Length: 96
Image (cartoon, rainbow, N blue to C red; front, side, top):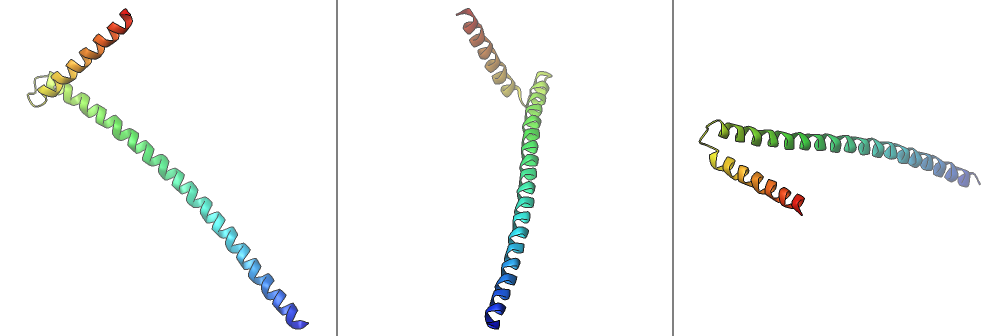
């Protein structure tokens, strides 16, 4: 009979340890999920910032071309032509 009690006590002890491990792992999982979410937010913000900086760079490049720089003259002409086509398309849409 005493052997059964010892086995039960051992099982209880092991079960408590397992439950504690499960709780610890769940807590760690929650922490990691929060950290992942924060990292994802940071990456998204940085990606948005990169996009904004690229747009600023393109704008500065065009402005530099308009001021007489020969380097990006072709790109500027293409951009202006593209904008003119867009405006023409909008006017055509408004006319209909």
